[in-house]
Image 1: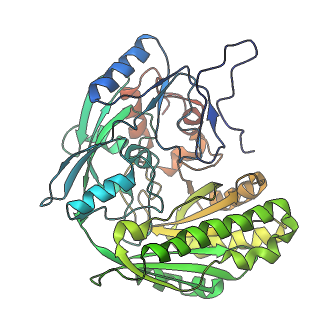
Image 2: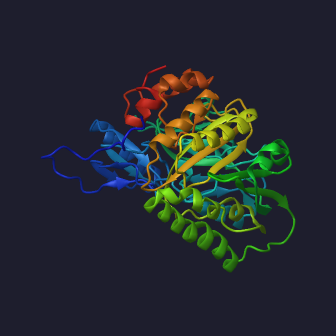
Image 3: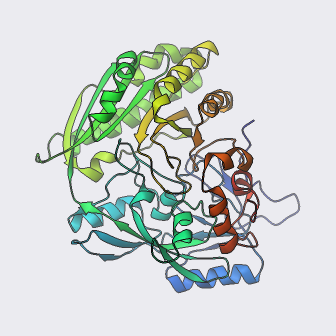
Length: 451
């Protein structure tokens, strides 16, 4: 069964905490004993040493876009919103060093000013750099790796209050573990990435029959720089998105048009439909065709504006990475179970693609992958739907996204990651007494020191 939110309030009789925290989806809520907002590296070191001396657990929180309890703590919540500057940019090499609390949106705008860009992004940019990195954030594209694959160096403060630097040449084992570290190794203070020259993307979106998309899927993925689609349950409709590099000047994505497409249609109108579904779920199959909002879209703009979209409709999400060659089977089985079990699903199913990479805990580690993401609107029941989809994904050898809802345990996951034992060795080295542990990490990684 899917667990309730971690971090329940203190028992009766205890003094209430000064501040309660929730994530973006409001499915996690916690009551830390203290909140720290360090600005400098020295501040971070001081916060960590104080927590260690007081034998308190601590967790870093970013923008709250993880659906799991990764940031939950009953100890010290460390918020890095003030630790968010770009420290160095070298346009010639593309190397960029930024503090860990910077959002991906702010980083992208700073890079654009230097004629650079991230090679690939997910579909939201409000995440903090360290938070997105730590949970394995990815975008889509047959040859477009995750955010972790763009990282060449990191600095973090471990549980003993020591500031450590790591890269492929300097403490390479810690570096490989920290690129997707789940917040279990320490407080990431800075990240060095290799950016690419700024580029434009032509975004083409259209509604197509799902059967047609699945029948030509290999060609769609291979024939575009970044391809994804959203299937609308209870229909045979899918919204396809093709993003390809081009040299054309910006067009079609001006303020008014973007407002209509990205705010009015994808958020206001879609949110209204979701509220109708929540109030009268029996109408879901009839309303489903309207979920494929909008018609054709053909826009050229800077890459970071094309990759991301505003997300104002709140939801809960589960996502699994399955072997790329099983993508069609995965989508077909999800479609069949929704109809067979008479589920009422208001949100489209998102399908993206990623190449194999060598990051130890990347969900695409060692294999080309397809990502199948299922969502449910905030306040609607999702547990049975997610449980049934998870059974399919597990059967297909799927790996759950570290920052999205799932029920897997360390015992389930260890065999899916060839470098699991090496990663655990670095965790034991960086956090021998479990300062960064919490309920979620104990479940998915095991207690500190567990191999």
